[in-house]
Image 1 (cartoon, one colour):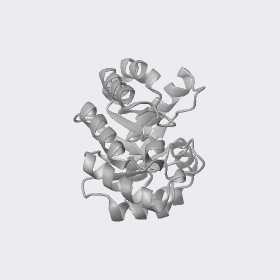
Image 2 (image 1 turned 90 degrees about the vertical axis):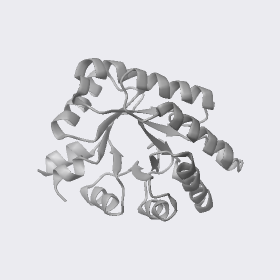
Image 3 (image 1 turned 135 degrees about the vertical axis):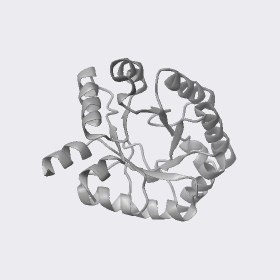
Image 4 (image 1 turned 120 degrees about the vertical axis):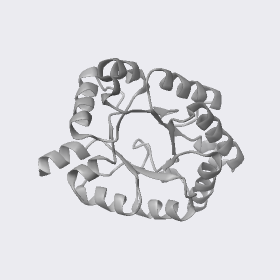
Length: 217
């Protein structure tokens, strides 16, 4: 797999709380230069990125991040606000407490509400696998599929663990045919990138892939 083939699947990410505009500009310029799939950035920077770079860049942001326990109404507002400011893709965090309470119908309803708010824009659903049992992961695959979301995503990168190949294999066995997969958290080497892509991931969220592949070249 070529460097550019890999980069075309990367959501080039900077979500640290202390990220400055200089950090975000560097991220965007790297994304444009390397033709990554998107930049994934805090909502507070959407407007500035859009005003600065326009259509040169595909903007992705996060909703209910990183803990997921905002109310559905708040998350819906976040989605609408993000899109109004120039965002094209949103990565939402589910309410993990609802999962642990066995309220999967509520989780599915929330995903559906956010997909309705996103409309034609891409909605990725972060399920934070490090906190889940296998049965919960399978049920969430069904929720994501039934609610019409575009992607299931492993992790925020802020939990106790990140993406594993075992979870991607599990997802691939239980999601619907229209749902794609995104791995995030702990994907650090070229071997990791190629492995996750080979197992069917359409996107990989990482802050390190661009620099790592540049150094390798």
